[in-house]
Length: 374
Ligand SMILES: Cc1cc2nc3c(=O)[nH]c(=O)nc-3n(C[C@H](O)[C@H](O)[C@H](O)COP(=O)(O)OP(=O)(O)OC[C@H]3O[C@@H](n4cnc5c(N)ncnc54)[C@H](O)[C@@H]3O)c2cc1C
Image 1 (cartoon, rainbow, N blue to C red):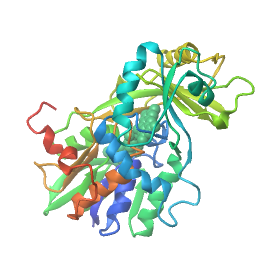
Image 2: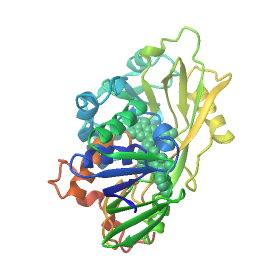
Image 3: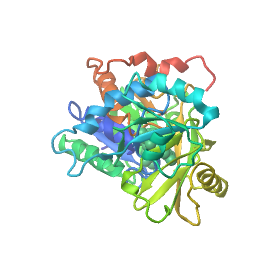
């Protein structure tokens, strides 16, 4: 007989695990992850920052609503801190000053910023070239620890009676007896009233298995390289430094520096691999903007950031299929918004009071794509 759950979550990334842990307070939850480990795809490949230069007002509101969780995680969530304080510096040349002013106005509704002149920029990040004349800094940013987060949510899920199966790739989804029958490539069957589609870059593929119309999700590849900092650099004192446009960010990483050219190359869902061109672009932009020479790329990786057509995350039941819940399109902010998104998902699934102020359920609803080409 098929194993049963109230809610079956497809995907063991940050979205699926955080939602599963939250729902497991009030329902029997089972998570199926296709890979043999959790967080293998986007959630294990991110830049791990919590900052407000990402996205727009909705992403910022979700980040703000998530912040208390990272500052004060629930008792027993993790034996190690969920991150460490790291300042976030957005810097600009003379020709980028207007863009910096606009960004400052947008972000300062959500977080306290310091305005920096050229000397202030250099004091915070001595690696930047002298043409970085202006800056805004959030001195209270967090470099998140994705492994602590993923393990914490998995532990919380199990502690609340939920289950997690890895190496269980969902291959079939059919309506049966008023619920869903879920089959996996390994030949196992499960039944549940509700399925949560938290399959990251594969969310449209999973919808297709269920006969649910795709939302038009677009995975986009992003590349990161690591390399040595100049001898004598105080790595611990460096911020996460980002150009005001989406050109380059860099930060300290395990005794070295990491950088991304902030590439957004459309991709099919896959095990994303770094591309030579974007790696070279990262090195070139580092040399344009900083005094660092990238003599050797020490390591590299790439991951997919998956976006809905309006670049906003999606949480809500599909209109055309009972019990099919979308939790997708977290784009480049899925870690830092996971506490708020998981509470939103749990409230919609369990029929509880809406938990977020400053964000409406309608803003996240898949209903906004009905009638649009997928
Ligand atoms: C380079 C880079 C930098 C980033 N920087 C940041 C940052 O600084 N801050 C931030 O907050 N976010 C950042 N992100 C974004 C963040 O990583 C993502 O938004 C987040 O990880 C998405 O989580 P997810 O659970 O939806 O996806 P995933 O982690 O990809 O999880 C989806 C899971 O579903 C599984 N799956 C798919 N199909 C099936 C199936 N049929 N059956 C079972 N399982 C299946 C997959 O194996 C996968 O494990 C970054 C991402 C990248 C790539």
